[in-house]
Amino acid sequence: MDSALERISVDQFKNIMKMLDSSMDDYLYIYDLQNDYYCISQNAVSKFLFPDSGFYEVDKNLQRVVFSEDQEMLSEELHMVLSGEKAFHDCQYRWVDKEHRPVWINCRGRVIRDEVGRPEFLIGCVNEIGNKQKADNISGLLGESSMKKEIIEHDGRLHGFILRVGIDRFKEINENKGMDYGDMVLKRTADCIASVIEPDQRLYRIVADEFAIVDLSGRGEADAIALYEEIRQKVIEFIRENKYEVFYTLSAGVLLFDSVVNHTYYNLMKLSEFALNEAKNQGKNKYYIYSRQDYHDFKARKDLTRIMRHAVNHNFEGFTAFFQPVVDVNTRKMIGAETLLRFCTEETGPVSPVKFIPLLEESGLIIPVGRWVIQSALEACSRIQPYIPGFKVSMNVSYVQVLRSNVLADLISYINWYQLPPNCVQVELTESGFLEEDDNFLRFCDGLRDYGIMLALDDFGTGYSNFHYLSYLNPDTIKIDRSFTAKALQNKTEYNLLERMTDMCHSVRSRFCIEGIETKEELETISRMGPDYVQGYFFGKPCAFEDFMKNFIDNSEISR
Image 1 (spheres, rainbow, N blue to C red):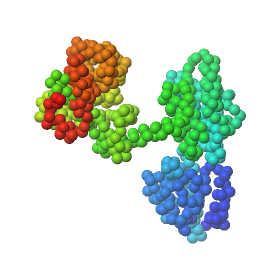
Image 2 (cartoon, one colour):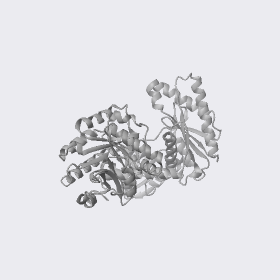
Image 3 (cartoon, rainbow, N blue to C red):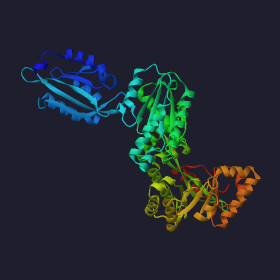
Image 4 (tube, one colour):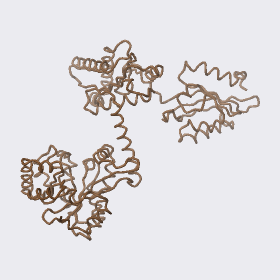
């Protein structure tokens, strides 16, 4: 055995680890190779998934702690240590903490041999190489790991708040003025904050352009808001002193400890980040106070997005294309159908399109889902046309699809695949989303016209674009939704307005479709305006393709 360590037993080394635990951030360990016993600092047990500070069956128990992708590599490394092939262990891999997050560590150890030269112990130290700095040299403040230490030390006795402050659009400062200037702004912002906090409040720089003030004195919501306003005022003074060379604002999230049940550091950081993001999402240059209900709704949206992503990756399970008849107002015959997207799983139940479609757009999932809708709609059209020649199908196209994918190529590809006439396909665009100045959008509209695909302007009159798009877009169809129809049915002025809109659309050679017809009386009243097409529950609710075939194709005469 190495002479310097020949008189140290495992128990003695454990006592040394216990004695040093409180005075170091790293983790000491000893691995008794001959007895298959492992012992590590208690601090590591508090953070990671170790069964205890000491345990047998080392390889088996380490499987709980080591990140799955790194287990094979570590097993091979330990085999070489046990066989005597390696005298020094030096590996970088990941442990899993109690929040089930992988944490990069560097594990070093020296092999100690017995009297006959066999490996007896592996003794060493583990440090977290992914750890954030304890202090920040730019702002002169303590960093997140120091904040973490303070929070953990007060666990169970947290009363007060965290005020998380972020510089709005800080990236633009770095891009326009350079990194050195950005560092100066960070330093002066830190000075502004430090100049107004109370002696018992602590200021930290946590990430990039974000700071956190921790108040453990029991102050409340009004104090946090007042502090934010003081900080804003100080920053305005700095901007003036700097002769407005750069102008920026601050957003802040307020997390009151009393509004949170789980006071673990990870949870507090997660919720304070949510609060700051909400302030920025609501327009920036303002504060937001954490609300449990808001966070619950946020989590529900995240969970729904996750479920839909899983659905997309599993052959669009849960998504269904529904179809609703479009009827010629004069002949009362069905001439086509509008395609409507629905989503329902065992986990979620039926989800309103008002909820899930914005999430598809925010996440980008609207691109693969939109492509699937196009295929479903055109396949349905090709199957119906033998029964109703010239049958048309329409579908909504999101502006995210137009701006971030080649949706026109998708349309043309499926039209060719199903051998459909282009004028049997109609794309519906919502007026409120129209981006006149975007070249991609203009090319898309021109491409539709050039190829002969029909264009409809949906929800007309509900957005900001109003009437001048009639001549600009020259849509084949103008659609009025149920909210406008309901008003016209109840109010003579609204009725006259809708009638004039019908005339105007005909004057620019567009067809007029009125949605939301629910009764025979409504149909008769609306018919007197002279629209071309009508839709609504009176003719049939949206339904899946097989039901649509059963309910409508054998009875295309929908007159009542």
